[in-house]
Length: 105
Image 1 (cartoon, helix red, strand yellow):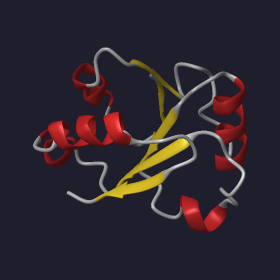
Image 2 (cartoon, one colour):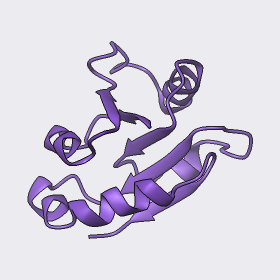
Image 3 (cartoon, helix red, strand yellow):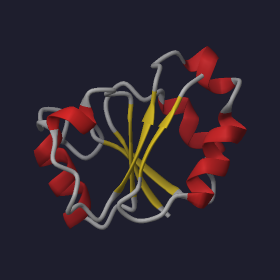
C-alpha cells in the first residue's frame, strides 16, 4: 500500500505502518499545494491512501469521484495517536479505494 501523509500527520507514525510505503507531502515538495491539488497529485502518483488531520477536508472538497482513500486523524498529537497506532494500522488494512474514514482518539 502506498500512503501519503499530509502536513500535520506525525511522521513517527510511519514506523508503525510497515510494510506500507509512506511518504509525506513535504518530502514530495507538495507542502504548498491546496487540498484539491494535493489529492489530485497523490492520485496521479498512485497513492492508495491520504492520511490527513484536516477535519474540514470533506466539507472543502468534492470527494465523490476520487479514487484515493482518505483517512482523517482527528488530532495532531503524537502521544495520543501513538497510544492507538494499532487501531490506525487495522483501519488501513480494511480501507477500500475512495473510502473516507475519520478516527477519533
